[in-house]
Amino acid sequence: MTARLGAGAGLVACALGLGIIGGLGWGWLRPAYVGNVAHGGVAVDQVSSPANVEFAALGWFSLLTAVIGTVLAAIAVRQAARGRARGGVGAILWLMLCGLAAAFAVYTTGNLLVSVGQQGLTELPDGEALHVVPPVAPAGLGVAWCVGPFTAALSYWLANLSAFWAEEDTE
Image (tube, rainbow, N blue to C red; front, side, top):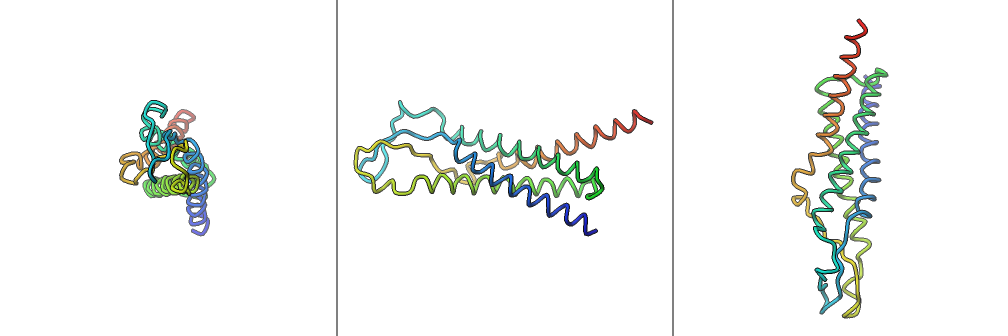
């Protein structure tokens, strides 16, 4: 019983650690608008700015959480193979919850990194060129919140199915 609790706690800790690392990557990979300071605000230069800045942020978030979900599934499969955790529906649900925690860590860390990098923009003189990464609201990510948990559950299920088929072939 204690080993199973430890395995579950280890999976949460791993999810949060991977989420923080992924959040640093997400904050760094998000594209920015190009603009100039104008009257205490930012005038965005649509021609110089990359296209679909918000969509690119959503795409990077989805990709990073999918990779994290796959890594978490590999860890959970390894824990189950070593007997530290029991497989089944409870394991998949716990894995999905860990994937959601990792996605939250990616979101929080990425937005924190972006906001720290953009402090003091209002203090710049008019006409100063700058790059601005737009904030992403939690509701703006929509279904992307489910990418990491779904990928984790699907990877775990497929790994268990593969192991089941391999056992049947050896018998």
